[in-house]
Image 1 (cartoon, rainbow, N blue to C red):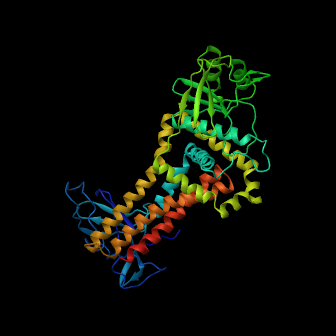
Image 2: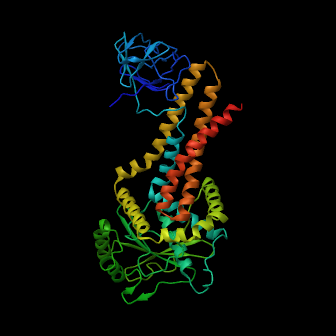
Image 3: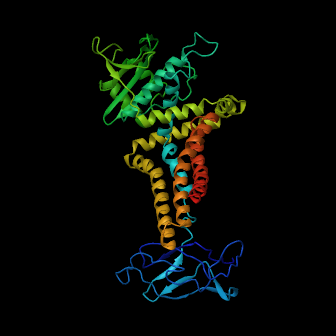
Length: 453
């Protein structure tokens, strides 16, 4: 297999240096091969082709490298009379260091794709967070008059009321740090037909809880399997209907039998207020006339994001996409249903493991931090090269700012478009892809804007 050559601006690392730098090709005589300035044996001058590389472990002081020669060159191909370097060439230093090209290091003057990927993964790569965004979005639309709880042409169909209440119950308990342990995927479709079953099942430390949500004047009912929330009714849903995730089923069955299972009715009023009442194992109030007020907390920034997302989500273009035959076919397919269920099961497994849970939350933030750190290095390198705030430094600053902003905006827009096609898996894919595209586009736009100043 033929070897590649080393292009301008490649990342260099030294086995004795603490910091990388970028190779500046200057001995090219304006000759490009395949559209690139390629490095030659003469591109080794300190301060011109190669900047200091941090602290030298061989001398214990700052890098003051003294080049000897590049050890692998192509004797048959020359530019400006100098032999070109092969990709595996090493620049030897009199101090004992060996400098090589690191092709795994991110290239370019900014990292829009990296920060964009980080924005997408951080926001939507955690499926629990994705579910929270989807449910909060529906709740916001209901409570701000953008979504009616009366279905079109179905004034006697009350499913939206019950589904709205169940979503509020989910969001509240998620906010309080509870794990969702039901086997069924959480509600993200307010028009989903209602069915008898456990509305909410949660775990937090040693506490295990089930809830039943009632909208407005609805009350606990008697069924063929016992009164709702009673031990008998709960046992039937655990044993016969597989209502609880298999990993938590045994613990819930035991708690139901020994009296340690918490049972609550969550009541949601038309004005959005919520209260909770504790029930006993017979499905009746445990305390007479006492209830606890519940509140879903939303920050000022969160309210602003919900407003922006709602405006985009309810725009004519995205409403048309959401209601199109294509989107309806995608979201009703077994593949989409299977993907959503798989994502939910994976998020439950992660939530049960503290180590995996922390790792999942750090992943996206880590990508953003890495991208920003590399951008900071690029800005510093450009500043050092120009000896001030010149055109390259302005481009690096603009590209960094634009990449991060574009990545975040792209992730949001991509997620909203993906949601219009298929809520859940479409939200995740759209958020990550949109973040990458937005990061790249934002970086380019940032460079352009910076060049105007």
